[in-house]
Amino acid sequence: MGGDLASYDRSLIFGVYSTINVIVFISGVLIFMMQAGFMMLETGAMSRKNAINNVFKNFVDACVCGIFFYWFGYPILSGDSWIIDWMREMGFAHTTQNTSPGPIVTLNDDIALFFHFAFAATSVTICSGAVTGRIAPYAYLFFGAVYSALIYPLVAFTVWNPDGMLYGVLHDFAGSLVVHGVGGFAGLAGAMMLKPRIGEFGYGKGQIDAYRFAGSSISNASHNIPLSAMGVFFLWIGWYGFNAGSTFAGGFDLASIDLSQTQNQPDLIANAIFEQLIGGFGQVVINTTLAPCAAVFAVLAFFIVTQNKYNISDLMNGSLAGLVAITANADAATAAQALLIGVLGGAVYVLAVIFMFKIKVDDPVGAFPVHGAVGLMAGGMFAITTGDINLGPTVFGTQMFYGALICAFSFISAIVTFWIASRLMYVIKKLGHSQYFDYGPMPRNHLRVTPEQELAGMDMEIHGQDAYSINLTAPGKARSI
Image 1 (spheres, rainbow, N blue to C red):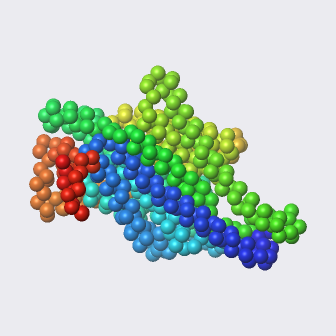
Image 2 (cartoon, one colour):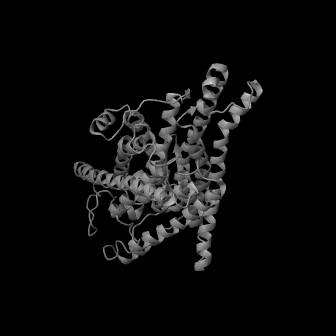
C-alpha cells in the first residue's frame, strides 16, 4: 500500500510530487487562458462601439483579482485568515487534523495559489458578460475586488477546505457551483440592478427620441460572431485544465495506491503507480469532451422541434452549458452519464434563456443561463452518478438545497456589493463634477454610464479609442480616423 511505497522508493514519491505539480501548473495556465476566451466571446457578442470596453473589463479584472486574491482571498480559502478563525469561534468552520493513513503528496504552495487564482478570476469575469454594455468601469472593478477578496474565497473555503462546513457534504468536483454558480448569480443580480441596455425590452422608449432609440436597438446586436466562436473554443480548451487539473488540486494520497499485485518488482510498481495516478485524470478528460457535445445537440433539438432557425450563438452557449454541467460531476460520471448530464445542461440553458426573456432581464451574452442556472442544476445532477434509483432523490435534494444556499449567498452579496458601488460612483461623479452627471429624462442609475455615453459607445466616450479604426501616429499614442 501507500505506506509501503513511502519506505520503498523515495524517487518514486518525488516523481509523483513533480508530476502532479507540473500537471496542476499547466492546468492553471489553461484556466487562465479562459480569460481570453471570455474576452473574445463577450466582445464578439456585443456591439462594436463597446469592443475596447469589453477587452478592458476582462483584462483589468484579472489584474484586480490577482492582487486582491493574493492578499486577502487565498488566506481565506486556505483557512489561514482571521476571518476563518472568527468563523471557527462562531461555529461556522471546523478545526480538523489530517488523519490520512498514508503520506500525502501535496502541491507546492505557490502552484496551489496560482491554480486557485485562475479559478477565482474565472468566477469574477463570468459576471462581466451579464452587465456589459452599460456598467460604469469603476463600479465593475469594485465588484471584482470584493468578490476576489471575500465572496468567492468564502464559498470555496466552505466547500473545498477540510475545515469548511460543506466539505464532504456537497459534491462539487471542480466548481459548477463554487465558480460558475457564484459568478452566474452575481451576474443576474448585476443585470437586474442595472436594468436593460437602451433599446432592449423597450427600455428608454419615450425618454429619448424615436430615431436614437431605434438606432440603439440596432447597434446592440452582435458584431463579430467568428470572434465569439474563437472565444468558445478557447473556453472549451481551458476547461480541460479546469476539470482535469482539479484531479490533483488537493494533492495525492499515496495510501490509495494498491501494490498488492506487483510482487515487489520495480517495473510493475512503476506501472501500477502510473495507471492509478492517471486513471481518474483520463476519465475526467473524456467526460469533459462528451458533455458539451451532447449539450449542443440538445439545443439543436430545440430548434428542430420548434422549427426555428439555428442560432449559432445559442449552439455555442449550449456547449458551455454542457461544460458547466459536467464540472461538478466529471470525476464521478461514466461516459454514458456524462452524455446525459450534457443533454440536461443544454435543456436547462434553453429554459433559462426563455425565462430571462419573459422577465425582461438583459443578459447580453447569456451569462446567467449558462453559468448560473446550469451551475445550480449541475449540483443536483450528481444524483445521476449514483446509479441508484432509491438513493438518487435524496442526493438530488441535498445537493440542490446546499447549492441553492450558495447561489442565494452570491446573489445577495452581489446586490450589496453593487449597491455600495453605486454609492461610490455617486460620490466620484459629484466630486469630479462630471459633465455627464446629468441623466436628463432617464432614471438615475449610478452603476451605469450615462445615456449619452451608452448611446455613443463606451470605447470613444470612456477610453477615447475606436477598436477598428486606429491610426498609430507615435509610440504610445493613437488617434481615431
